[in-house]
Amino acid sequence: MSATTAVLIEDYWAGLEQQNHLDWDLHAITNRREAIAFLQRFENRLCVYSPYIEKLYSNYSFVVPQSNHGSITILPDEQAWHDTFQDIPCAAVEATGVYIIPGETMGHSGLYLKIPSGNRLVGSKELPFHDGLRLLIRRYKTLGEIFLPVLVKGDLREYEARMPSLHLHRIKLNCLAHCSQLSIDALTRAITAHVLALFQQYGQRSTDVVMSNSSH
Image (cartoon, rainbow, N blue to C red; front, side, top):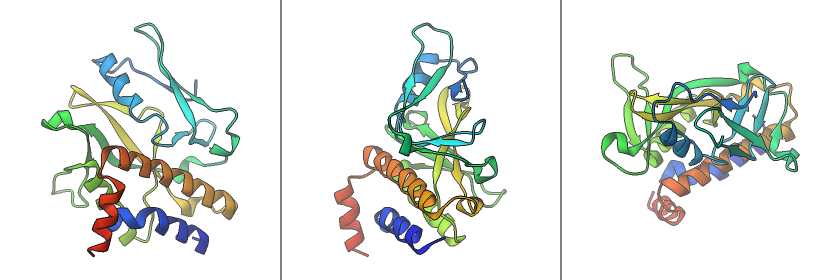
């Protein structure tokens, strides 16, 4: 990782730590309307990866079919070519086992993260989005890695056959050695900016995070 990338990561994550090829098939979802409404909450809030053409999109919109049939399509913004990242191999995109789930599944509002334990004998944790995100950032940092979550086609699933959920993947920067450092820095900036926007929407206010930082 370059010094520039490291600075970008620290700038974006410091506050959180211290305080056709893009169609989604909805046929397996029991409550289609609920699934669509859930997915739309993440429009331009998480970058989306297409393994078929090895591209990552950070500026896009969801196209929802008018009928009760058909798939949701992701439509990249053709004018924002700088928000599309090319030549991202499938090997650089790893499943995390982490799911975003509606808080309603547990009688709460907002979003929760279902995070697997590192120990197979210990069950997964369901944490409010902001707490879960901080945990994941710390967990990957102890491994010398960066948590850069993205969505992949097919990540819209049902949670316990009742509620929709989104399975998170992550970008592994050590698999992007063929990319220029400028491209890696831009990709890192795009992913973290999206996650921060999601954090600010469903987590604590940024001012609360700053106050929390100053207390440590």
